[in-house]
Amino acid sequence: MSPLVSPEPFGARLRAAMDARGPLCVGIDPHASLLADWGLSDDVAGLAAFSRTVVEALADRVAVLKPQSAFFERFGSRGIAVLEETVAAARAAGALVLMDAKRGDIGSTMAAYAATYLDPASPLFSDAVTVSPYLGFGSLAPAVDLAREHGCGLFALALTSNPEGQEVQHAVRADGRSVAATVLGHLKAANAEAAARGELGSYGAVVGATLGDLSAYDLAIGGPLLAPGIGAQGATPADLPRVFGDAVRNVVPSVSRGVLRHGPDVAALREAALRCADEVRTAVERRGL
Image (tube, rainbow, N blue to C red):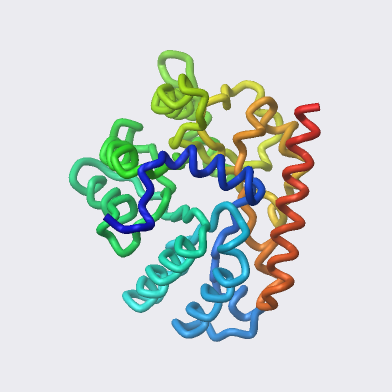
């Protein structure tokens, strides 16, 4: 087993990282326009330089780094090689790595996706991965099982911020529950054992920070809530208590452009990430007053 694999569950490691470094996830999103903004070429060399800089600047000080797999995959096998190096370097520096791959399938195919990101023998082994439950939550069983075995985490798409998601996520089932509420319910059940121990569970939901009032949904799933939308998409840290209510302490805000636009200067990237983490911590603490 790799020395970077911990038997401690992901939820416990995530809580410790957020307490120590602040509740923040920074995306590694090397899309073409951002590479250009950094003065980098839109090729594997630019991809590698971008990724190395983000890891150097942030991996030893933010709780979570979230590489977006698609931006590496577009360069084929050489891009995947850069992704492998990025994951390994980020984990070695102390960051938890959440692979943003949004995988979802059935049977042996889902098992293969799970092994890609959650098996310590894989070169893409990560602390957690985003998954899509829209072939039925039960289809994610291989990922749930492997995550439990190796102390990893999952973040299932539940209430996403893109407008198109509403036609599926807000659809109402025959039992009167929405699809999103059903996904949240499955995650709560998966986290039940950790919750009984008073710990943060390892099975989280993706819930957009831009969605406004979510009081109709039970966000107290016992696990983390990955909240994209801070910064360029319009949400601010001050919005988090209003959107997430009593579950706000388990929110992991995800920021990409709001931090990455300050690159390629390492000091500026660090300052931007620290400022955002401090703003989130302040908003969460105010909710507890």
